[in-house]
Amino acid sequence: MMEMLEAERRVVESNALIEYQRRLIEELTYEGHDITSAQIVFDSLLVSLSLHVQDRHRLRAMLNVKAA
Image (cartoon, rainbow, N blue to C red):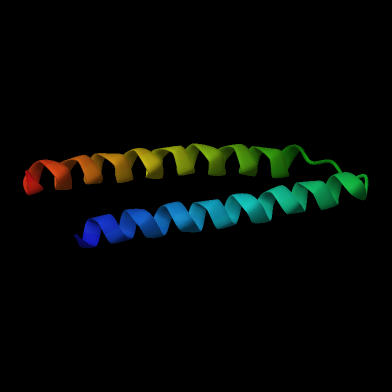
């Protein structure tokens, strides 16, 4: 159960970081700055989120099997 809570926390945290990075990219773009590095970070955060969501799905499936 603790693993599931941790997986949920990671998904929520990743979403918050993605939103922050998205806003940063918008601001940098508006100000005319190069966003290459910021975009790389954003893309990496999306990959991390995908992995966290996969882990959460795996844990949910394990919990459902145990409950059955």
